[in-house]
Image (spheres, rainbow, N blue to C red):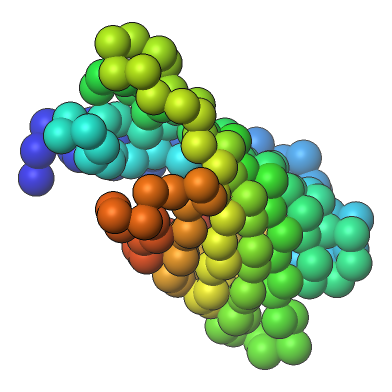
Length: 176
C-alpha cells in the first residue's frame, strides 16, 4: 500500500470517528437514516489517477431526504497533488429501498461538472452524467455504510477515446 493510500485511510478513519460522534450527540440517538426530513453528510477521502499522475482526493457530500428513501444532494471533490488540479461538483438523486431491515438497496442518478486548473494543458471543463446502484448496511440508526457500482458517461466526448467509465464506490455516511 502506498504512502498516499495509507495517509488517506488514516485521515478517513480520523474524520469519520469525530464526525460520527458529533452526529450522535446532535440527534440525541433518534433514528434518522433514510427518513423524510433527515439530512446526511459524508466525507470523501481517497486516491486516483488521471493524466498519468497520482492524486489525493478530498471532498464532502451532503443530502436531504425529501420523502422516505428519496435523497437529493451534492458532493464536491478536490483532486490535489497532481497536475492539473481537478475539482468535481456533483448534484445527485438517490432512492434507498427502505423496506428491507438490514441491507437496503439503492439506485441513483447524477450530473457532474469537472473543472481543471488551466495550466499548460488547455483542458476544457467537462460535463458527465451517470447512475449508481448498490446497497447500504445500516450499522445503527444514524450511521450507515454501503457499496456499489457507478457508471459515468462524458458529454461532448471525442468518440475516438473512451467516453464512459464504470468503477466501484464505498460509502460511509451519517444521518441526522
